[in-house]
Amino acid sequence: MSKRTTFIFTVLVGYIVLQFLWWEVLLVKQSNEIITEKQKIAALSSSDDDIIKRDIAELQHKKKVRLYMITGEGTVFLLILLFGVYQVRKSVKKETQLANQQKNFILSVSHELKTPIAATKLQLQTLLKHDLDREKQKQLLTAALNETERLHKLVENVLLANQIENDNLAIQKESCNLSELTENIVARYFQSSLTDKSLLVQIEKDIVYAIDKDLYPSIIINLIENAIKYSFETVNVQLTLKTINNKPVLEVADNGCGISDDEKQKIFQKFFRSGNEDTRKTKGTGIGLYILKRICDLHQAKIVILNNSPKGSIFQIHF
Image (cartoon, rainbow, N blue to C red; front, side, top):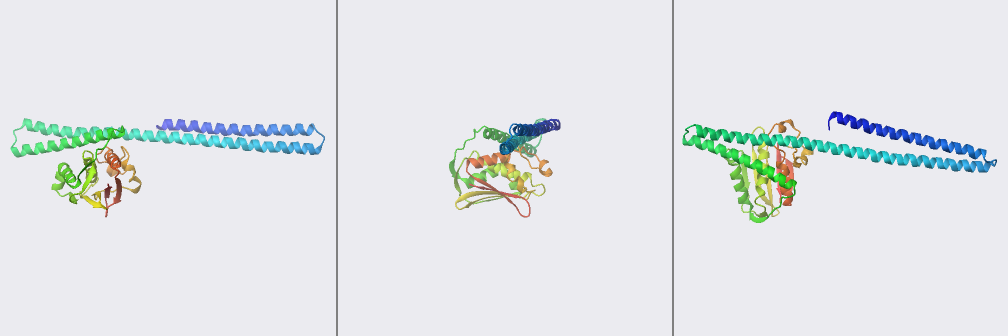
């Protein structure tokens, strides 16, 4: 909501409330005047003091009843009006916030799409224009493949988010060796992190569990990518898969900037990005953890976020 619209809306609501209070005062005043005139008429129409006192007492009682009725009904109406105004303002604020988040999402996605496309194009053009040795060709092709993989993951996330939004995402669980599946996913998408030791993996052998093998990679990818992304200095991410009470528990720990307590639930909202200025400078679309949460919900899995020591976060998925 713009400042001008907010100002007009506030003035209009204030005017309605003041007008209502003014008419309530006038109504009470008019009711009192009518009762007073009736008292005068009752005093003039009878010479019996007892009758006059009785009539005046009845009129005084009616006066109180009307006063209570007018102020009571007026107060209830005013409270309903103010509550309605509050709900409208809250709804408009929420819609405005969502619209801004969607705008930022579109800008982020556009940037995230352009970067790997431009990089891949440059690498392929270099291969075509220059007669490079075999080793240099291999390096450029590997870089182009990495950028393509990055592009693939982004498009996959956007499509998944769209399926979730339209309630078209269904799971097909099948029993599998979760240990081997996790190892394969990490090896495929994070080979460079494994090579430079910035990602350490500890996986308990032969954990068998029924899971959707098409959706499970998104859990691994989003957890590790976020851990790497928000480790601004030295990247030190550890993935652990183990069993607790015969149930699989997936854990990803990092030594990054961490998450404040009031944002630990908000981070799973669609398009949400932390208010921390450092985290806002990082690339991202704000849908990774939203997808993660919805996939975990479909698997009846619980997400627990803990503070790492001395800094960072620990994400635990309890299946």
